[in-house]
Length: 410
Image 1 (cartoon, rainbow, N blue to C red):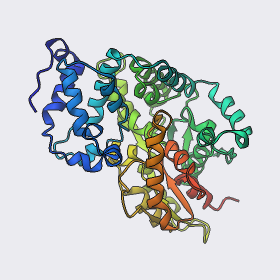
Image 2 (image 1 turned 90 degrees about the vertical axis):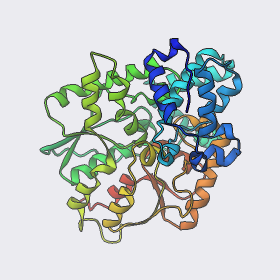
Image 3 (image 1 turned 45 degrees about the vertical axis):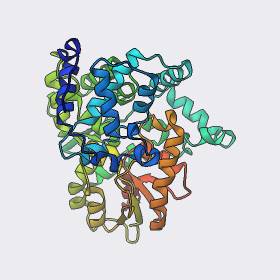
Image 4 (image 1 turned 90 degrees about the horizontal axis):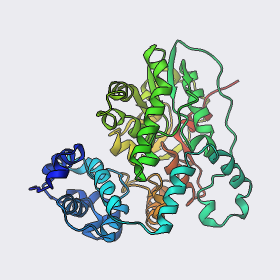
């Protein structure tokens, strides 16, 4: 693709990155077939090819409009298009650049700015946990739109106390401990059963995705630096063999720390090391299968329907591991027979900012999962889990919780 970026922008790091990405795109249109919003809306400008055209115009100096901003807002950043693209276009990186530039030039309505500020500051605040407890206590009285965002209160199982030679770090996350604390406990318990000790750095927090995806680039980088500072003593001392993410959205972000902080001389090398050490929890499944095969309670293996999050299958390019390895442990795991590659509509804060499209995608996804007749729907990211649960009476859990429940604890 021919590009004519303005000299001022072309000489910046973002300009050079954008030009390199744009040159890869041949506008073949393969991406439109796998874009969730294009499937719903049928508008070329609500698919990757159309959005790339809009961003190219912006980067070449064309007038930026509110319409351009809205088309970019409707993108889920699911990166399904990257899995499809034969040219290897890094669309996710390009849309981040495009959104940042558009938001600098187009004033958002006050209501949108307020909603984004509340999400950016509220979800990452220490006050989120007590606010969630209040919401759970009042859940029966909440309107359905709020009830969909507040999971029923469920206690976390006890954290294991044994020590092991093998140790890993786990990011507790910003919303997961308050919304679904048992995911972290189940992770620690399953790893403990496999002879791996789970450590948590108390000063680590949000991975940076929330602020980054809501336009606060500097705030996202600050979150990344804080986490690196929290983890570095254990990494530098070789205390841990990996940094494990049990939320695939956090995993794809932390694996990108090296790229995000490449221009920061104080953090570039550390960030690259952190990214290299980061593993999604599913990447430990081969070790878990070896340690736990034949040890699960008889009859505890459920029939499961698995929704692979976009951040797992497209962002991290990890496919097939969960269903294969849980199958090796005796679970019957099925994917939706149609559209298993498409987003469920959660996409971080997308389900709050774009509720109509998010609900349509949720119902479309559940329409493919529920005919499987599974006892439980499992996924690997808290956002997907809560979003899907808001539309079905079938239990929706993290796969590690189901595995934990099958262990023969005394």
